[in-house]
Length: 313
Ligand SMILES: Cc1cc2nc3c(=O)[nH]c(=O)nc-3n(C[C@H](O)[C@H](O)[C@H](O)COP(=O)(O)O)c2cc1C
Image (cartoon, rainbow, N blue to C red; front, top):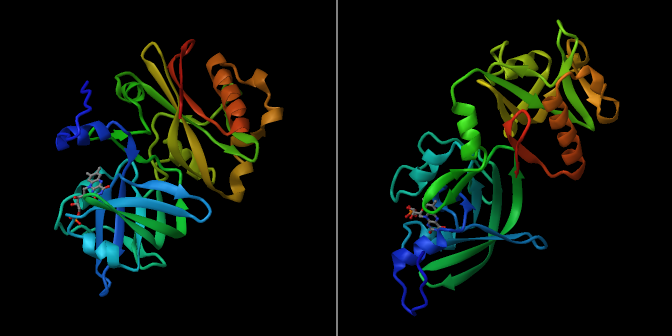
């Protein structure tokens, strides 16, 4: 650990010290007078005020785009998703053809809103503050949007993933057979599937997450019942000998009318027939989910069937 109180700091060391603050990663964008887009990767983003809606990001005076960003009509802050590391790297390289192969549309300020980001804020300039070798751009939010995808993180000079912690990654990628499941809630009801052989109820499961076009996968099974979901969070990952179970907490995107036919049904929290769930680990998980849903504060369980750790998410 470096403990420094001298007046003149070593720049690299100070940057390393600041880098202990874990952040997300954004790409800040704007357009020039001819509509040509420009952008740079930034982790100096901070929310500032709700009323009025303000945020800030600081841009290095040495950045190629600094002049444009301080004189443009506005700028947009795009918060990157876990799988957008390459995009982050591309926008962190001066002079690269940053927008090649990247779909975007213009926000009301004209600034590029990038596809597949976790959230975006389109801003007009509110104020600019001279701050040493950076300029702080304070933007007033004109429009914004967000979704439930896992965001990309950055700490100590490296990308980090909020979606999968190292113990979870180990659980998901270790050898042995894998069963994946989804906890999906809608209006105080939870989606359960009746096993055609045993008659038991369980959250929907499959051997892989897959995609909507693969009928024997989790997403395929749900899609063929008319249920479209996103599975952004791991809710429980546990093992029993070499069998691993990974349950995702799903976000319901769309339900078609056909849902109440088939083996999948939504059960009211208060009317779950617990005696039809013949598995203590599943009961414990569902009870935790119902408790946490009521508090709107979720966690993730990692361990084995009987004991494990609860991590806040
Ligand atoms: C994770 C990460 C965070 C960064 N944060 C900032 C930042 O907040 N402000 C900044 O000016 N540059 C930041 N940079 C560096 C710029 O992205 C980089 O200098 C970029 O080349 C500037 O673009 P330009 O020179 O083409 O305008 C960051 C780079 C990375 C990889």
